[in-house]
Amino acid sequence: MRSKVAERIQAETPEEVRIFVRQYTDIVLRINELLKARGYTQKDLAEKMKKKPSEINKWLKGNHNLTLKTIARLEAELGEPIIYTSREAVL
Image (tube, rainbow, N blue to C red; front, side, top):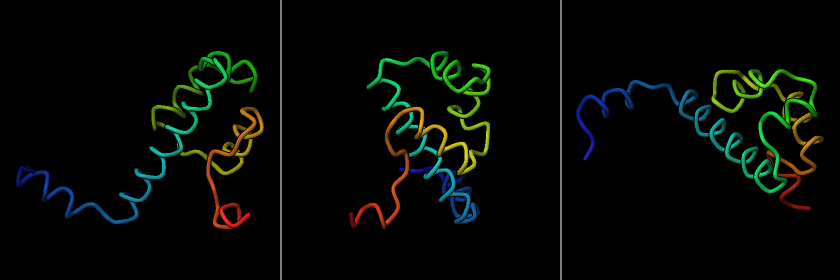
């Protein structure tokens, strides 16, 4: 059972924030799945993308607002989609 404080916080949290947190979490989980499948570390990914490991860490800790361009670069480097659109689901 949730506490009254937790219920109040959730009730006061804008829907767009809840959606953002859910989507960001899904994206980070997918990136981590792909890293694990390829045997990459965050440092390996940083080297491949010519980024500092600290920047990759920020992306995967939720301390950065990933742009679609960044997600596309990640998809290109990891070789698989990170997010799926309805168009892709139909194909």
